[in-house]
Image (cartoon, rainbow, N blue to C red; front, side):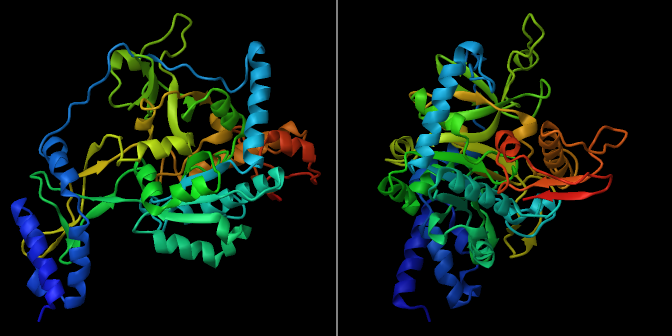
Length: 477
């Protein structure tokens, strides 16, 4: 027997779904254990059809036109190394960034909702072990970087970590099992990303199981809404945090708190700032920083017209050469403005393979894309900002993501790049290394963030090491 409360909820959900031709979501109601019925109704009642109905029309039943703005020009950027006439400005930026961190005005924000599925790893991607010698996880490397920054700036720095409904419990348990890697637990704030349902190509919501909708994270642009809905935005304001250093979880080389980048953001009155890299080739699969009508934006590699992608300057340099790598500094006030009445960021359509339950209740694992997912992208906040800047960084120093099990951006290439960076720092310190015939270090190297965060700190600490031989495994802490 249904309880009267459950009956009322069921009938209310049925009425809403029937009116929208989504009644199939309750198709297996009579087969469900009473305990499973409540959570299914919770998921259905959490759906915002005022938001979903127009999105189904514009992004599911139709494919939005990808409109590339007219008059696109390459985005201006601050170079990694300042020009002679920029020296004083960069020194001021370093001072401003360092002061903001030491005064508690900066928090680290890490987007960590992804799973390690593409890496062949059953768990949150942040728990994936990647360092060359000690095999530390991504989370541990970031935690050690944060500890080193706390030592440098003599104060506790808050770390906000966005999880997903799929991995939130796993991530919290992972940190607890590792004693927060030496961080104070009250300085680490977890919050969960929002979700949206997956649709078939006819606009019908999919069931992942008889008692559950097929839900997926709403994209890294959903970070801003999740900060708001979780109460973290209020906590940031209460704690007088003004700036968020935004990183994604898959790049162990990233500088988690870059004082020059933060300082340039502050000095130039930017609301959201971005790091860029010179592209490897014309068609590298990264977004392109561009401007149109004075507004900074990112145009996806797949959307940039071929003539612009292959355009070169008279000196032979690539015209559109600033690639987006999802490293940002964001004003807390800007996030508050964007999320005051929901989000002003647009949704993007992606066709994906989504497992689902068919009309007979059979679990289907499709071989081809069968569904539409909707996502928001953080870089869509750039043209909304009153002011936004780009700061170029150095690929060998700060970018080698781990995304794929094999090939580019894999654990092999990531560890190789971590070893290369360590070898470069050691050579700068005058330490000789063995090399193989291909010119790669013939040893395995790892420098803990707790020893040095950058080359200047590494050289200042003047590491004293015994001779390094071919095949050695060297860990510096």
